Image (tube, rainbow, N blue to C red; front, side, top):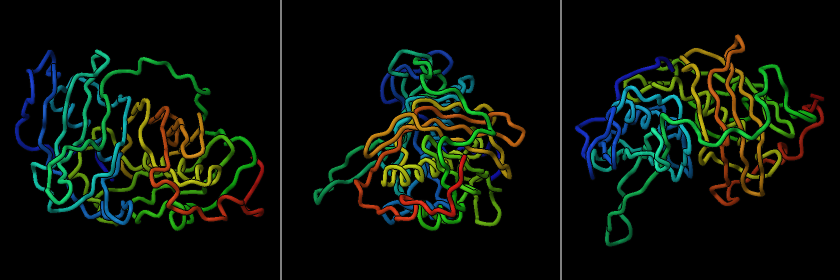
Length: 327
């Protein structure tokens, strides 16, 4: 999926819901931006609970573009305190006034801007209208808390312990069952006791699988697919070591050092930070082929949002003797 830019899908003028704009165009209170939600064919490959839903990585592209449109000087490649609250179903018939982005000052008083993707929902037989938040993040402001986890691994490092290895094709056939547009771990997948490792890809947009995002989604953050594939590796780790199917629900901080272009392969490193019975927190790194760090995300939280209703195949929990090797 190519291109670091692309036309913004935001349409119509901003509607201040309260107050006015501050210095450098940053909101003093909150501003609502109507969104024409793109619905390219490839999003049909991203399904949860049987329906196509907007990937969190694409929602972050929309939010970054909205913030950039209001303040081009703000560094939207740095974001923090992201929360993925609920799925947003994709449908061509979504009305223009049913999805929007709310911009507001960062709650901690920093120079960042908090952006939230919201929608209108009708509840119950009476059709009462309710506003729902789907994805929220603060852009343009560094984290106030320094990282407290293990040092950044190099591109040649392997997960600790005895690594469990299997082809990426099996990852998508049995563990992360999205459609072909989201098969961007290239394999082999290596799962260790403290993390995972795999090659991931930024596919060529507009080719092969009708990845038509350049005309639909902005690309200020580079290709969204390598980070999405990193989430898949963390999900596989959860199935191996927790026996749960975990979905990403947010992160502490993300830095896009070099926006990843299309037709690029990268090495993904995933390191476990904390774990519980139904959740785990990871740090993620994406390295270019020459070893340079392209992107990193800290304190990425994955949780079992379906409360154990999705079963985990026995082979990934028990392992397979001929697939295991010493790291």
